[in-house]
Length: 133
Length: 133
DNA sequence: CTTATAAAGGATAAAAATTATCCTTTATGT
DNA sequence: ACATAAAGGATAATTTTTATCCTTTATAAG
Image (cartoon, rainbow over all chains, first blue to last red; front, top):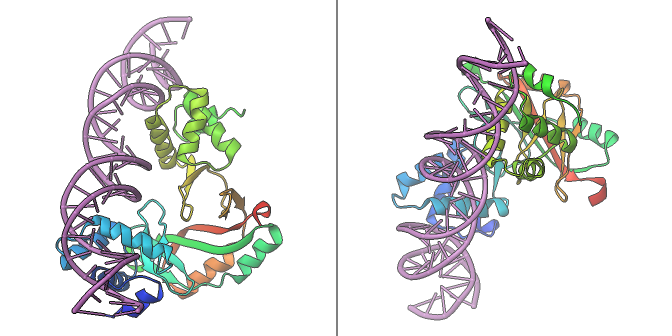
């Protein structure tokens, strides 16, 4: 159980018990969708409202405290913001993993072939994890 | 106006007037979301149902006739299936462009660092297009 | 060129997902 | 300790997507 009080405040978010619990759920799961997060939260706060989950995730997104990962043919998952990385998704069991990849060569390829000024890169690699192969 | 009759049939989809129009809308727009597609279709079929749009897009996705592109902080757009490519998205005006990038080096990097067997790669590069810079 | 039939379209209801509202409670700066 | 803006909970309202039901139609076979 990490204490995320300061980290929340650093992102201009009041450190409420619900937000601390969301932070810990995100940390322990790594990646979690709204429904699962709601279920997890219900265990700690039996009367928490689903609206609270939505309001918080949206606010946390606005304040860059969490990131959304859009998963092909599935619901988005959320993660605590950390240094840049890509994602691996298992199409069988749905597990999501982080992976650090060097995007520099790709980005310079973009620079030479287009006039876009890229500021953000979202890469999701789908396939089978070890267990599901 | 391209005739997509054969192309639809090749994907086991009956060539109805509505589907031919959807095909042409996808072709002329390149990338289009559900709402815009519905608006476009209403011009040709004043009484087309939104349900028809959803049913067709879902069926076309199942039959790999179209692909979904999940856009960060926005609604998904759809495109006719074509050879593999990545996407550029302008965060200002929302325009979506295709871009061919060599993913081989990246994928071999994945192979050496993980046990995942990758079968699909979704890359979305966000930034500013020429006009919006 | 008919005809039979499975499938598609339209209208609409239902369900699912997300956001807004309103009032009570609480985190936090002073 | 207190004042206050903000957050939580309950719930309504919206929005998005899917299901249902009946009519129409694309298409394959004769």
